[in-house]
Length: 140
Image: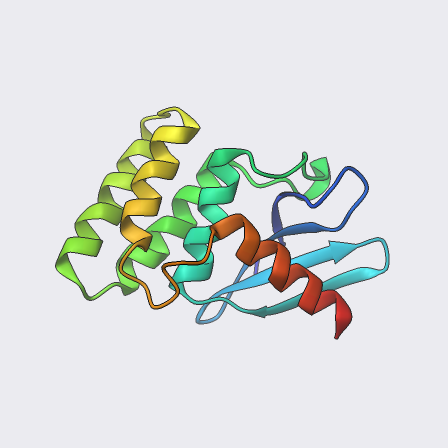
């Protein structure tokens, strides 16, 4: 298991949110000064994390755990490898190519949003979803 990768902070001094590779997939992680909490992450949640990263939706992550483009590329590759729908696999492949090519964040986020649109929770705004899940993890 590798260390956590933070995509940003919820507020300037708030908790950070990110992901961590763990067998057999990835977990959502939230960190504060008092520790790290995590939960399983499905494909929709992983795409929400990637979208928020490329939209720069949150404040800067702590440098010691800050995610890189390569980390996000691996995350999206993992989601693509697990996907069984051909159309979504193609969209995810395009998103990986956009990440690898260094396209602007909004271009990558648009591709990720297109791949996410077929999910069960398609109405949830990715950033709102992440904030809600962070609050839930910190309450428990």
